[in-house]
Length: 179
Image 1 (cartoon, rainbow, N blue to C red):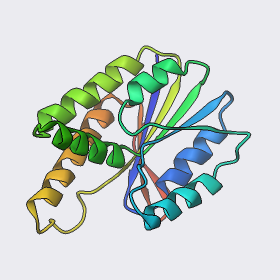
Image 2 (image 1 turned 180 degrees about the horizontal axis):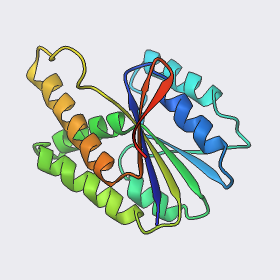
Image 3 (image 1 turned 180 degrees about the vertical axis):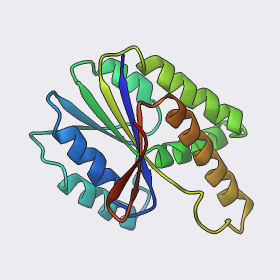
Image 4 (image 1 turned 45 degrees about the vertical axis):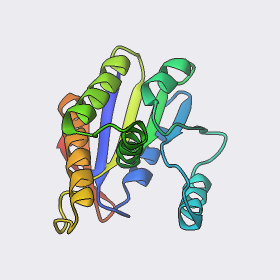
């Protein structure tokens, strides 16, 4: 059975560093699954900064904007996967739906998230999912941003309900919500 760890927190809270440090203390082969799609220069700089924080001999990196489950299944040589991050994965799912002319509803996100977990739960691996806690701030002023916030919150709840551990990172410090 997979050991599932959900690491959440606000922007720049230290969640990615926390997940990476935890994963690096574990024995086994590690794979970093990057969901970010570079869309501009600022995002490219963020990606480069994240990449520089990973020691190449400790990590292999695969860019996977949508098909996380299929990627993990196709790369069974790894013991530990760090998926960073679900927030951008939701953004990618929303974009994919838009490109296909489909509405990205909570049920679409539930199905995608549940399917992802169902595919991976039987594997003998450790999965670290990193995600933003987007519901603690001001209510966004536009419909699209509110919809995105709601979908990320829904995804986080689905993952958290099936996770073995849920850790909220605030100011670089872990608060264990589920252990």
